[in-house]
Image (cartoon, rainbow, N blue to C red; front, side, top):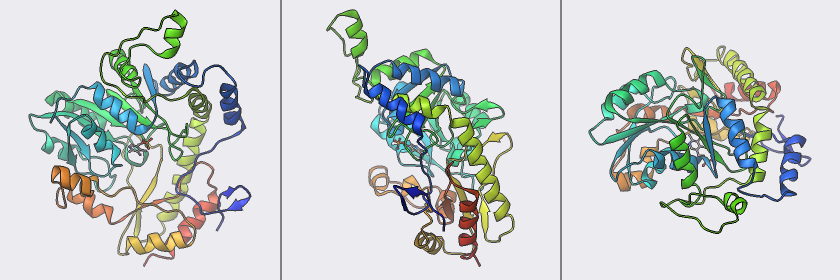
Length: 384
Ligand SMILES: *Cc1c(COP(=O)(O)O)cnc(C)c1O
């Protein structure tokens, strides 16, 4: 089994991995030697670069993808006990951000072939207390935003994208980051572009962007650099916020990484095409379906396994140093949600059933074609 060399050693082929090159390192070092480690000029520069790369008017950088979701849900001003519809098959943070803001996450089911939130299930969940929908571009494929926007418009709801999987993707030629009122991204090392930890929200709405910039800075209306430039100590805290700032050296890394995004997405697509071609010849395994018009960004490459025990396959591949994973256990089955919101089995039957079948295979730009072939061969040996 070939694997990613780390520090002269060989280790497990991971399911996802960052790429950091000499340009990235030089960009970070330059900032470390400058006057501004945080709240400096690299933050707006990264925000401009990110906005430009998605085609959105504004981008607001924060300290994690979770902070991005928190800032976005705060920006739409939930009232206590407002309901927000989220898919069940996602990372817990998609639902947690609603709870942070005093709202109630209401779990919608997913389409079994794409694992994207099913608009019909969203529609069924709408009540007079519903305020918003958070769509998750599962694995990197944009959701059916036309259907979701139609539901949102009809019921007066805000549509937020959890686009943590889909940076660089598109839908009918429209870029991810412009498909919802607010789009949230993570800059964690397994995602498309990294700043170590980090997150960012895109929007075309300047007022929402302004609100999020205040929110990430304790609810204070000016930042340190603005005060320094005015020779004034005074500031006003106008609402309750957090310290969700992203540092300048992280933003420098982000801008440097962003330049490589198009090539990385292209490489992810090539790897997916190779997996797809191989699995077309193998029974008992099916890649997720891709909707017409979707420009898939392939954060993950997920297959469904049939007539075989997924857990056994998972452990067998891990034993061969192939870093397979499972994304995700349905959020409504987590003890926190069961205890706090009374969720449980039966709420989202498709998510619950498909959860038993899914496996995420290694997918990252530095993976080789041989790595793909090794993963396919190892998986095929476990199938009936
Ligand atoms: C990664 C991820 C997040 C959270 O991002 P962090 O940067 O780890 O806080 C939220 N939602 C989804 C769907 C993710 O994949």
